[in-house]
Structure formats: structure tokens, C-alpha cells
Amino acid sequence: MKKGRVAVLDKPNGEFIIKEYPLPDPEPGTLLMRIELCGVCGTDVHTYHGYMSDAPFPIILGHEIVGEIIALGKGTKTDFLGKPIKVGDRITLVPAIHCKKCFYCTIAKTPSKCVNMVSYGFFRDPDEKHYFTGGYADYLYLFHPDTDFFKINAPAEVAVFTEPLAIAIHAVDRAHIRLGDTVVVQGSGAIGLLTLICAKLSGAGKTIVVGKRRKERLELAKKLGADLVINMEEVPEEKERIRIVKENSLSGYGADVVFECAGVPQAFSEGIKYLRDSATFCEVGHFADTGSTKINPCTDVLTKNIRIEGIYDNEPEQFVRAIPILEKNEFPFAEIISHKLPLTRLKDAVDAITKGGKIDGKEVVKVVIDPSKG
Image (tube, one colour):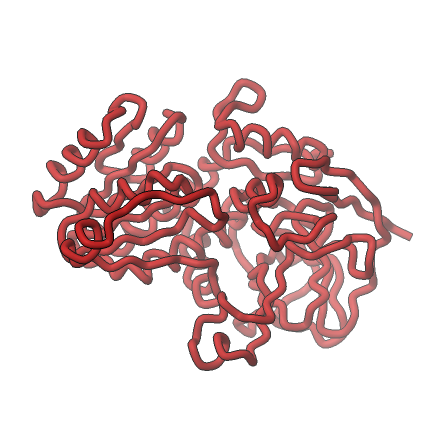
């Protein structure tokens, strides 16, 4: 019987233990895929450190997944859009599985808040049936018949960005960018860079990226079209960064839209100060609780007359929008990947992202796990 490996995180701040399980024969309405690449997400790092209080342990993490179909269960014939599928096709998936019946799925029309949601990359106890439930593994078993997956015609190094690009699209949709707007993106990690791309595609007239520590990321932001980058190490004073943003905004009063993608509490309070009056602030980076920050409800929110949007997760709609962008591949998506690591070096990736450091002497921008490397 053929087997496959999974990297099981035993506990918060624990160890990734490589285990082997027998490959399942797909049941009706399901499929088995060989994982080509899985992106290492900041949420996985937060889960590793115990910031996700509802995360079960032991757990197989990994939800930014692309791979190849190797077996189809009876009746599994098409993807989410009704496109015919076959063994050998490259697919990606919405990791969250929504019930399509609760208040949020049916009435509020926000399935990302489904009260019955479960998700690949966050299932408990891999020793139980199904085994291959997360992206840090050789295989993924799409065992739930309500899994939403998509065939994608793009290289794996590009297709692996479908899930984070869907987050960026969700943010830009909610921001209602207008042609010519000045847009600030705080944070130059993968989500920040993808949000920059989406802002430009949505008509931003001027884009400014504010980042810290990693010059390579800011150089990549320039390559992706940022009109101005602000390195927080070179401009350490908040007041000076605010002045630069306002001076470089098209109105002279400040940004029309700010996306907080850094996931740092201080960035939230600083980002609001970048805004002109009657502008929009989108919180994208704080998927895990990393602490609080001080804002003044009167002077920072009410008198500025701003709108604050909280961008939680993504939905199939954003995947549908993301796939043609990736298939067109007009931006150097693959260059965002700084490291491809084997499954056995997953801990190296988590440590480097946590510390903002390097792997093998190279600055981290985006790490993906390639199980074929060992």
C-alpha cells in the first residue's frame, strides 16, 4: 500500500513530526491530489506560537495549496466553475469549507463567517481517518464533498498564490478604490505585495508601500509598481512618515485608502494617520491576536469621518477573480518566492519568519514548501 508523509505539529511551540499514512481510495464526490507547493502563511506561524486560541493540536497546517489530481472518486467530474477535470490537472482550492446553510452563508452573504466552517490546514488529529488534511504533506485528500476547488492553467510557482491573492482581492473589493486614488500599503510581505498589485489593477493613481527590516521586499515592491517605498529603518520617526505620505498624496491631504498588511498593532494606529478625511482604512494583517494599540475614537475616527473595513478570510468569489489574474501572469508573481524548502525544513521557515531573518543567507520574502525536495 502506497503511503505519504505529513508534517504534524504536536503542540504550540512544539516540533513538526514527519509521519506516514496510507493513501486513501477517494470516496464518491472526493479526490486525491499530490501537493506541488504550499505557501507558508503568517497565520501558520501565529498558530505555531499559540496565538490562534481555537487551533486544535496535534495539527497538520498549510492552506495555500496547489497540486495535481492523482485520483478521482466516483462522480467527481468538474471543478467549482463546472470545468471538466481529469487526473493530471493542476488545481487549487478554497481551504475553508462552508456549510451553505447558516445565517452568514445564506442571509448575511458572508460565508467567510460561517458558524459551521471547517478548513483544510486546521483539522485536528491526523491519526484519525482522512489523514491528509493539510498542505504540509505529500498529498491532500479533498474528502469533503462541499470542498470548492478550481482547475488552474498557470505554473505551480504562480498558482500557489491563489489563496493569498484572494485575500488581497477581498480587501480591494471592500476598499472601493476609485481611479486616481492614492493608496498606501503597510507591510511588504506576500499579502502586502499582492494587495499592491490589486490596488494598481483597480485604478490606484499612486501607490506607496511602507515596510521594515527587509530591503529586498521593498525593492520587489518597486518592481511590482510601487511609486514610492518608505523604509521604516531609514525613516524611523512616525511623524516624518506621515508627512511623506501626505506630501506624496495626489490631494496633498493624505491617502484615500490605507491597507494594513503588516499584522503589527502599531501599524493600525499609524495607518489611520496616513488618511485624509473621509477616507477608508482596511485591516488585513491581524488574523491573529497580537495585541492592542491606542487610538482616539473622536480624533482618529469620528472627526476624520473615516470608514474602517475588517477583511476576514476569503470566499470562492475572490478565487474566481484571482485565477484569471494568475493565468495571465502579467506580474512577476513567481519572483515573490524567495525560498523553496523541503517538508523536513518547515521549522526553519517558521523560525525565519518569526525572527524576520534569513534562510541559507538569503532574506525571506515568501517561503513555499516543496514536498518533492525531501
